[in-house]
Length: 443
Image (cartoon, rainbow, N blue to C red; front, side, top):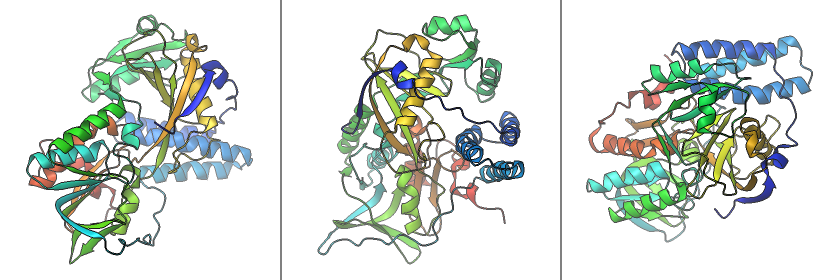
């Protein structure tokens, strides 16, 4: 990654200044307790609680700094709860963005399917379609695989690996165990000693953990290069550094797309553009509840082999790659600039928070040098679950977007699923819960 930031300091030094406390206000604790109860009962997605924690941290910090009254705090907490329960996102702009026309003399190409977005989902869908004899092109605004698909943590997991529960955590290992088993995952509870046998550098301040065996890791950059080669070998055209500026709609159907270089006529337009999907869909009059969110990851200098297990806890996720580097990330602190941004840059407060989380969880790594850091933009939907759908009216629009932190691991299967929907209007796996209509207000 050309825009990775060189760090050249130890984790202990990087973590040192991240010491501002996050305020905890009673009204927000009460809301989180209600959300947690509904998550345990299966009435809410766990992502809703995660989104609450992220949003509430920043909101509580601002309310405390402003010395807000008790009624103002309570109102802010209930407003946030109401918004998240409704699956609401920041209001979409009423006006469509002004589309830039194709340049004079632009060429015209004809395809069966045009896919906007050259990430793992778009490439997987393109390859599947091409294998069925479909003429398909993938158009990517930057480099193929250069956004979130090539910038993530490289973890492939069915709720797998070691999850460590700290003494300060409000949950117990049995809560995590029950959650995983209720959803069909293989899992076993571990006491603190067993956790430290898997990961010797762990702190003593843990309750225990949960281990699930179905997990692995890959190099995201190498994976995307291999997938691009495979798609090309199947006959897919890949156009990089070319931005789709217009989605053509006429006579009740989607007709193709336009870029500054050319017009591409197609029977089906598939939007698989991650965080940029919402803006593209709005051009065609479709409200897509997808918001940008920045992730940041630190890589350490190579160190001796610690574990082959994915591991996390204390708000952190981590893996050790084949070269011995640790790759790990976590949420930033509430005083950092908003995570809901398209800015692909690293920020000091978040890097310090990530380092601090790691040192708290694994104090034995305090002296390990942080080598570099990078960021990427993901585009989760309002409920954190993907949107995989073919729109009926106007016809000719397909969607494969809205992935949060699970997009890389589920991307190949999701790409194949949307390809099946385009080809046959059916899928080999049930995607009913992933339809866009779940966000429509009840009539």
